[in-house]
Length: 489
Image (cartoon, rainbow, N blue to C red):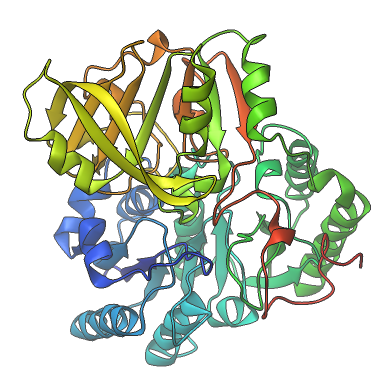
């Protein structure tokens, strides 16, 4: 009789500095999937669930997708929302027990009102239900803030190794291969957690560039050590005020925790010896716009303070204001403003009208009045066929209005917050990304995978907001100490 493996996930990156909580409707507008719908959505996606499906199917085992709930990064998950999601998870799991193994798909930086270590809480609940003898293996986002509870509740975790996250399918595959190895009796994973007393600045987390490039090269070298099954570098998510915030390492050995600790300590020493390089420099708005003049067009301006993929609201207009004041550059920007979409929907393509756009500028939340022409309205659906950050295939930004300024600049207005992870966001609305001098993408590193093919230059802009690049500007109450760059360990 073939082995039965359950697959479960609650996936959210929670920004504790964001004003609005994440509620059940946010998950419903994201991905709220059960049973066969999980396989239908992800079997052919560049997502960890797709990698897990392929490996378990190939091994001739029976994968039972139970539940996968995911919402766009945002504020803390409300207590009622998490209670509902976890109750659903445990109820549905109960329907298929007993199982021979459990694959879990957390983000690793989930926070709820009642449980700051949300991921640790639900994974522990699964462990308590299935018992100590049932293998639990999972994937993690590279930005996970990893707690001892998470690691102690599972047999093995494997994280993404690339940022932008274009290796999610490979990560799911690696996690599932450990599960298969356990069930076939070929491996006995023992994992250790090393919480490095350091938090890496978000704009320094581009794994193809220094300082991360050399760090990951060392990890790749160490992963060849006999007896090491997996090395995960969790760069961390600095916008969560929780005890486990910061960089950490998970080393999975084949029944040799001492070897795992030795490898982990070597990586920790490397990180601490090079800690100054993980702080980075910050380009303000004025400097960034000046830099555009000497760059090949189009230039990608990464609006770091309004990183939707890090939980920001998607309505920062600081760069927009500065580009309007400069008046020499043709730009594209996407703004989350449902009211503006509704107002624009009363017009026909080619109509010219005055449109108020609400956003957070240099002096707070306000309306800017623009004279615009309506280019088109869209239902907000688009797809992505290539491996991109997030691993998704199907996207939905709600009803969308695209308007232009007299100089050809384009403002896209959406009814839902959608991170800029795919050029399909533009091309689905017949927008040519190569026709602009600058493209504003509300992110830090994740948009690079999508925009690098058309943007000749990339500038990370230190804009204000709940994902601003300088983490020392936030007030933390719960982080561990010492933690560089706040303290020097």
